[in-house]
Image (cartoon, rainbow, N blue to C red; front, side, top):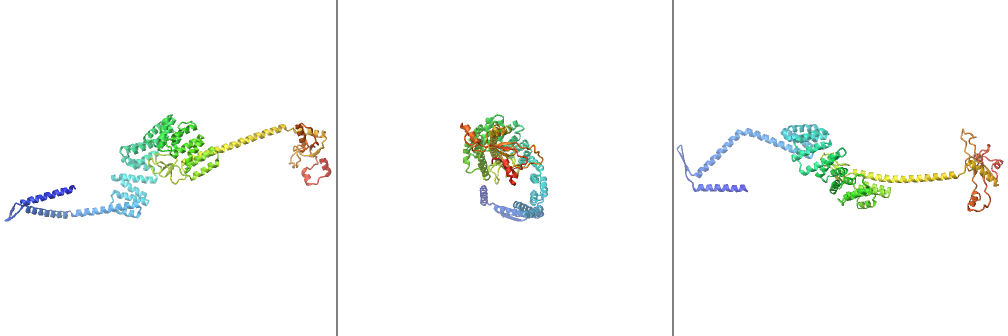
Length: 592
């Protein structure tokens, strides 16, 4: 718009000047060598302008002829450079799509047309990487390092090649050099922080972060979050060896990032151990309200060592009220209720989650069935359901599932890469193993209780049997005294005597076992034994009559006296195989 206004002003001034000269034409006379030329001022000015233009054109043509060799050389160089840039562009596009043949052709053209161009070295290195030639790529990156304009680009290429080769020391040294040259480089700072965190040098990692912040390489919010992560990692590392320093760093990390779960959990444990229960509970509850996590629930439950299960349940109720609609609150409350043997409350808390239970919910139900009803069958049923249930969250970073939090990713080395999410494509998470151990302990407790009951029952039965045996032994008469007395009583009573040869000390007529070899016949000589009288009208009837106070009636029972076998007696086995002698039989079994 301004240019248009200026153009209009110039045209107006020119028109005004021409009009002014037309109104005042004047006269000009030129006399030279007898020639006299007369004209007006406008015509003279027009002639002067034309002559000046012709002279200027002639001068340009003359200068062009003089400078034509240089111009031709410059045109050739420019044309060659344009072709070289076109080859570089074509090669970079081919690298992007993975066309190895096109990359090689473009690299050849770029090296021929632009041999000293930095992007030509970059194209050469990338072509070598596609072809699987790391030595060629490393040579190209080193050539780039020698050029100050591409030094950082070459250092990054060498760093990537060292990481691919697994040379962590070389990668760390290259990253240190790049970070020293340019503190604002994100990749160099991250690589140095990763290496120092892997070595446990969290103070050195924080120094790199401070230098990056001083050069305004990151914003303030990102700086505070990263510093809190490094402080939390250092506090966790020092928690067992130097609790005082670890507590200071954990509290500072919580101040920078109140919702960082590892920092809040570490600070809660250390403050609880130091006796600052109120401050520890406040830190844990603030973090739990923003990010419900089972580790925070464990810290809150065991904030004061030695508390009873009911006291832990009260604290978990307070914690769950900070996030009442979260699934983690219900799970934490159910666990505390089971530990406190408040089974009804645990079942009521878990009931809303049973429509779509996760693996931890199924295992809690299995533990509840085992602890409340000692029902191992239902506990196993819920454990089997846990295999097909929804997965629970876990710490994951770049596809790696970990059972604990870490400050950097084990894959990419990125700081603060771990997040608490449900890992995709994983059958079980590390936290599930802990819940499964609780179920195993509950089932083992049920089995131990059952085994204890069975053992107590066996001991009681054994004691009862021993007691009965002792009573029988006390009531049983001695064989040496009872046999003659019973025989005398039977003879005096006038009862018919039946003589049976039986081996002692068996009280019934039995088959005689063969004598083992090498035994002394005299040592095995049997003694007479009185057999029990037959039931019915015998001794039992007399005994009952005496007990009832009535006189004895009926026929007296016959007593059977077992005498030792005669020397020529072949025993019951011979009687079974041979025809017995009637006279011998009548002699041995009188009265039958």
